[in-house]
Length: 325
Image 1 (cartoon, helix red, strand yellow):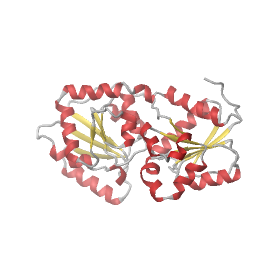
Image 2 (cartoon, one colour):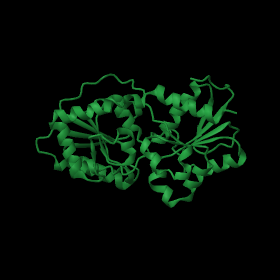
Image 3 (cartoon, helix red, strand yellow):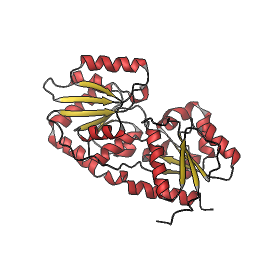
Image 4 (tube, helix red, strand yellow):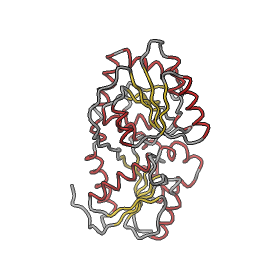
């Protein structure tokens, strides 16, 4: 690796996810802060640009950080901006909000979190895009899964996540299935909370836990036989990287954000919103050891993708390139 920068190099990371939250954007920002500090930079994380002097701005979210990007660029037009694009940027907001494209055009580098996202970047901007896979350092001890077939769903309850596809699938399982579902994540509105509580009360196999600490979430994931990610859109979900790091097979909605992390040949995809197909995959994983082993092998061979050493090297290469002057 190249040698680190001067300790006085100051970088500000902007993320709309508030301090203390477990939103993926906040977790990404804090992980980058940690890596950059190890590389010798001084780093602050804010929700919008503070106005302070900085050698470089790293912005998460093209749409929601647009005002910070433009303000920094206006004040320091020759200083670099790295923009980390989210799933909502690429798969929803770019079509409806000119700010997304404007942010992408102003940024010096576009960062995506999985390879399929490159296809969603406009052709004239693709030359300044690169993939930096999110890493996970796993410190939880190896767990012995319980006798039943525990399935975990992790993610805040909001429409983009199609959070209740898992609940809709459970009545379609064979009556003798031992699958039980733990659903982790904060309800983002009252309707979501009511729905989660109704499913918890009426489905014997389903329990909504709410939001846990990151450490407790990882521990629960490590004890699971499977993780389900049912999202309608994702930039590259950190929980998928965590499942890969822990060696937990994933059943995933068939969207670019999941394919870019799990690979086009992954066996665990189902059509978005199709609870019958989800139920079928869950049943296969529970009752067909060869299928479950194949999923686990496909997860295990992708562990190097999510290693902290790999992500840190990618971030260092980005810094050396953008701060070369």
